[in-house]
Amino acid sequence: MGGAFCVPSSEHQTFQYRLRALRRATNNFSDNNKLGSGGSGVVYKGELDGSIVAVKKLNRGAVKGLSDIAKEVSLLHPLEHDNIAKLLGFCCESGESLLVYEYIQNGNLRGYLTDKSKRTELTWEKRFNIIKGIAEGLSYIHGLRSSIIHRDLKPENVLVDENLEAKIADFGLSKILDERRTHNTTRNGGGTPGYYAPELWSLRQYSPKSDVYNFGLLILEIIAGCTIPQYSSENNKLLQHVVWQQWKNNGTLIDVIDKSMSHEHLQDQIERCIHIGLLCIQDNHRKRPVMKDVLRWLTDNSIQMDAPGLPGYLEGTLLILVLALQ
Image (cartoon, rainbow, N blue to C red; front, side, top):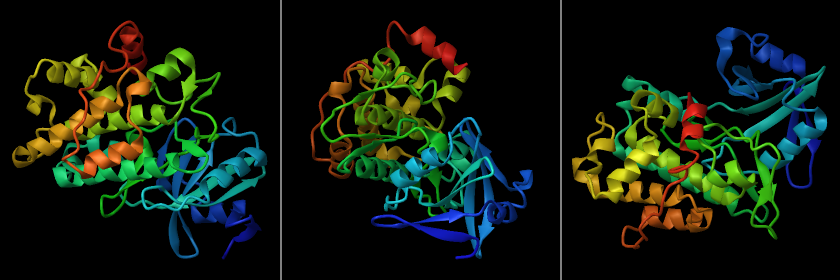
């Protein structure tokens, strides 16, 4: 494989790319090749050995060198799932740290939710398929012998391929949870303001249920056709609380469904998904479902579900959260 050499592991081969090969692939990390950026680095489109790839150049303060890169590679490279973005290799050379991923043609979900013309492409059938794909990916990483907790699930970190299939990406904040533990604690919460699970904010605890909370928010965003920060800035209200109030008061949920989507004949399925979303964002993490159950609810409409409890941040910390979103 051109520009790379193999570093053997116990089960897989991981490709370590030379920095010069990645510079050449991305036209020296040209702005014209830039796909996007985030807190941990910048992603560039590149071509390696005739294949299009995505090269993430990590900020120098984001990693401490080869040991951090090796940790992330060992975490991600063995993952084989249709709804997880595939890590192809890495580079740690001359003070630079880079990760090479499969290239996902249509960018991220945020691009679809914030672009009116793109959003019209998302029929309910396609939105439901994206929701189910995210659920499949999360169920997979949570179901591993030592669970992987993503810790930063949001529209920017869900990629959409040419068939509008969802692929979970950006595992930079991910942690492994030992099978003997139900949760871990952290000094620095990680994640993104507006998407913090309540227990991460108050107790510095993360677990699979933290990802479930983020997944519930994603369901509501996909149905409403917006992102949490976008909705809050336009309406001065948090999307999840608008949905909750409608549900609690037996109001019509049509008001929170994206107007660009034809949905009349699928109203029951959409409302079931809203119900699932509200169950996932309950303030009490013990009452949230596990992803295995969520998948069952999504695929079997005959399964009865409990009424959702209060969503996170409904009282007390709401002002803090709103300020964080601004």
